[in-house]
Length: 250
Image (cartoon, rainbow, N blue to C red):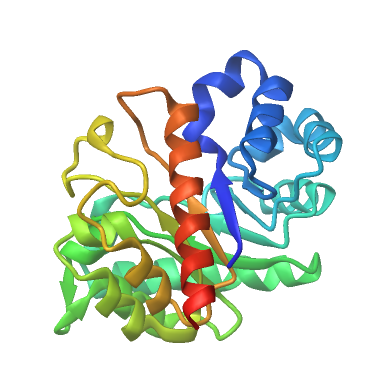
């Protein structure tokens, strides 16, 4: 199992010292990261990743609101092979026709991405699970409208906050899910209450096992009341020890 870190987790540290923050990520034991806003930081970020032996298989960028050629060019420079649109507000997920329009925008983005050799995906929050369209969640309805080459990065914490069972949703979405966000906590919208993996209410290892076509599991905190570097280190230690234990028992 391959683990990465969503760099948004460390946005405050990155704004103060990007190279030093990336070095600390590598020192903790991560070998992969998931950048955000990478068009703006591509040169400095690329140098820091190279210096610390890190790769970025995926990255977040607002494909439906910013220049796609700029995004895909920066992604290619950083070695990002999957660009994931990270956020579309709740009002876009209430009506079937709005979801159809969003799916078409992402399908178009995927066609452009293919010209750069880059795959496109989408990352959910809670509202795509709270909204029900034709008897299923808006996320499931959305998935049914996507071209085959598109992928999903399922934020399993927000699935649970949205009132759904992440294990069940991952089973329903099947092979479309190539990435998941791994986070834990009390399953509320209080981001500062989020906890390292294995310390909250999410059955983290069951969730990972349910994503049968998973390429990378991405550790993320939206926020954290404690020391964020200790938090990500605890998450990685939990994941590595449990993955090793499962491997030994296989």
